[in-house]
Image (cartoon, rainbow, N blue to C red; front, side):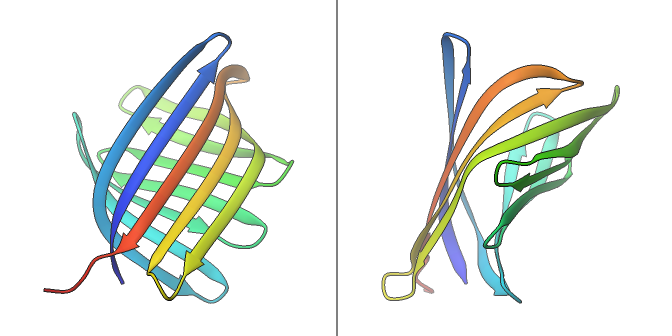
Length: 140
């Protein structure tokens, strides 16, 4: 199903807070008992293909292309991920505090709400709140 996606990321690190917003067009689909949101993100390095996978108990953000990243999520569990850069691979740890997903068949709208703490090489990089909303695109 083609969707218009709004991705809002709030990053809190101590007293500072940064917010990033992105609007993209992509696909939403269900496979087995997981839901997927797939979209392309334009970056300085080029285009990154992003896949957000959510099931009842876990989530995963995968990026490929200009950026290669794997971030796994499971409620109240510390999980290992990685981020590939031209300078090497960074080890990442996620600790998930909230993982919610909604989808309304009638309106074709949905959301993914993800709150997690992120560490890079063991150092705290902040608390990330990823709020993704999407709406079915009408076929023309």
